[in-house]
Amino acid sequence: MMRGRWRKLGATVRPILTDIPGSSLMSLNRSTTSHFSSATQEINEANERCLGSVQINRTADGRGYGIFAMRHFAPGERVIESIALKSFDKPHSHSIQVDWKSHVYIDLPARFLNHMCDPNLRAQLNDSNAYDFVALRTIEEGTEVGHDYETTEYELSEPIQCGCGSPKCRKVLKGFRYNESEILKTHDQQVLSPYLLSNKAIRLT
Image 1 (cartoon, rainbow, N blue to C red):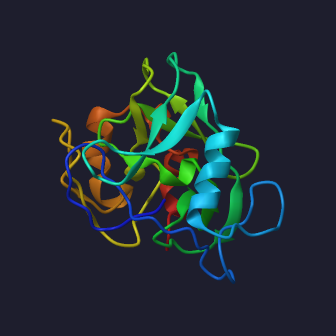
Image 2 (image 1 turned 120 degrees about the vertical axis):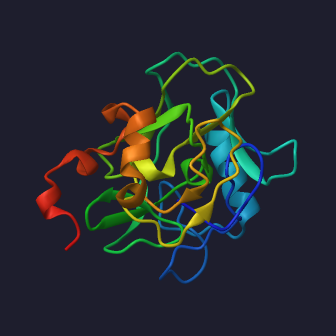
């Protein structure tokens, strides 16, 4: 996911950046190989596609962009789906990890999901080698949605100072590798990306 050094109340937010590392211009269109001409165009396309479900909006407290529910979601319901636009064998500041040596750059709106130490979404691997994001609990209309970055990232490309404001806040995010014990105290294993539950012997060596 897009990560940066932010210390704000609420969900930990990310800067706006839509370029794919290694690509010539802007992020690829969800369904074609054409390019968006601006971040605004990409956001507008995502909002139109997800109308009635979720929307990318500015947060009321000025933290930046967030993803907000446009309707009620029940626990276990898919809230956001994503596809992989580009893959890498090492983490980038804008990627999300799907396997031990597989990191992908995903489309909007999922790419703008903010971090929450007490998330209302979990990542679920899908057929696109990316993630769908599923409700962990009831989500009411107007609620910001987010997931826990350390449930997908074994090691972040750089630490994040978290200021999510939750009693469960871990303060500094570095990845599952460093905060495993704290994560497992507050999260069921179903919240973790499947590769994190695989044989530890094959972890990055």
